Image 1 (tube, protein in one colour):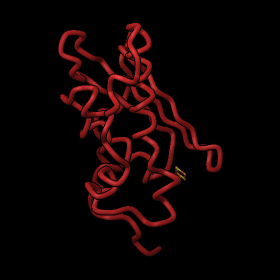
Image 2 (cartoon, rainbow, N blue to C red; image 1 turned 90 degrees about the vertical axis):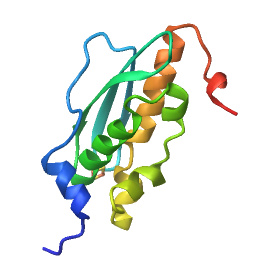
Image 3 (tube, protein in one colour; image 1 turned 135 degrees about the vertical axis):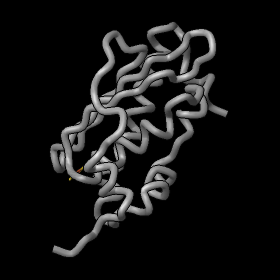
Length: 135
Ligand code: FES
């Protein structure tokens, strides 16, 4: 079979970072892809005073690309403020992975959505609004 994935994708697929769960997370985001059935959960632990994401874990049931993108997203978000993490883009994740095969770009690059949902969940739990992250 032709090797369609970059070296970085294969590296993270075989040795993914930040896999697992966090007990009593500050925020939890879930995203599923109804087309292929892949699904992932992102858990974040946030410092209430600084808004920094101190810990982040991801649980992914998915293909090679879904595992690599979720791993990369957690690496990019760790130790960032929620505002910085909210601005991480799918393009940034794909670029940092050395690119993704075209057909996988939209299908598998879901972790950024899960991360944003986890951040929104954290804000809601604290009676805060998503508007403070925009602009
Ligand atoms: Fe993996 Fe679609 S086949 S996300």
